[in-house]
Length: 209
Image 1 (cartoon, rainbow, N blue to C red):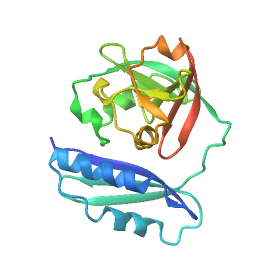
Image 2 (image 1 turned 30 degrees about the horizontal axis):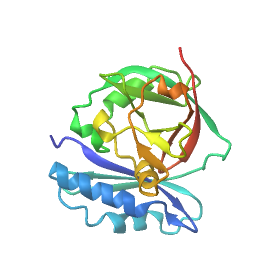
Image 3 (image 1 turned 180 degrees about the horizontal axis):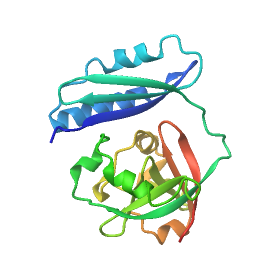
């Protein structure tokens, strides 16, 4: 299966440069190795070329395919206000926890696009997917975190069928989050957050339908 590309979506700031660059490049290299792609040795240089001369925050998207080709696109990025809260809904679409490709960020996004399409943009800012056992996995573009009062955010394990998000990895390594399975009932017992490396951690209000 090589009819897809790996993706990394990064945030670049004029003063801080690329946010979490080391973790993004590590994930890209790890996925390339595990999927039989060549090493993405030119990725860092391509990213730097993409932001040369930029004056404001940028959203940078890098794709890397099985032939070793790298493409980078750049767009203006407006960070979310600190008090932002997203409306979240639960998708009927389910993830298959045995699909190991879900652990890598790729252009195979049909299941996420199907889930997102279940709700209009004004009905939900993000949609959370469950797996075949009803366990909480991830959003279509975010990782899921629950503040359950223990002092650490809880986030689902990769084995449930989800991506090793870069923000998720950073929070776990910093001991601000821990891995633990989540059910829908759990989401009612604490404060819900979603997040990714581009946007950071976002307060979430779950709406049941």
